[in-house]
Length: 103
Image (cartoon, rainbow, N blue to C red; front, side, top):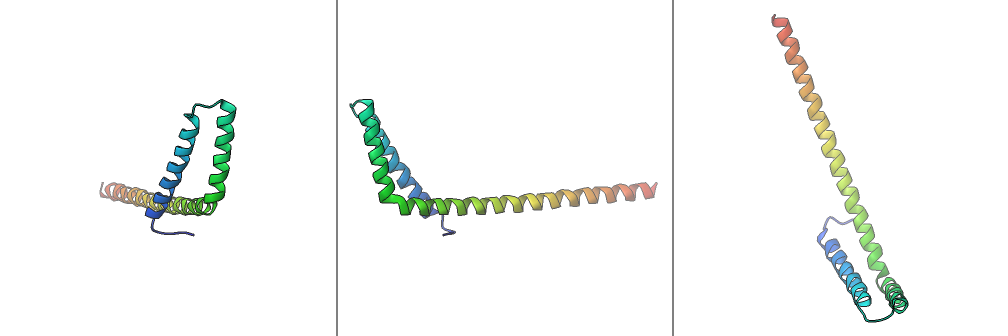
């Protein structure tokens, strides 16, 4: 689903990053043995994945659309810049040709 409104995408990514960061920080700073912390982190991740899977898929689709739009804009700008350089070279060559004829 490709949207032109990127603010919802940014908001969703911010929420996901905040939730994930909070879970990870909470588990890592808890005073528990490493094996237990890793188990809890895995459980929290699995729960997060089940609960927010549609949102993650939607965020991924929006990210891919944003990347595609950015790529198209960059390619368009590159093409225009290339055309500009060619026009400058042609103008310079024409100017040199005119200067040679005047001699």
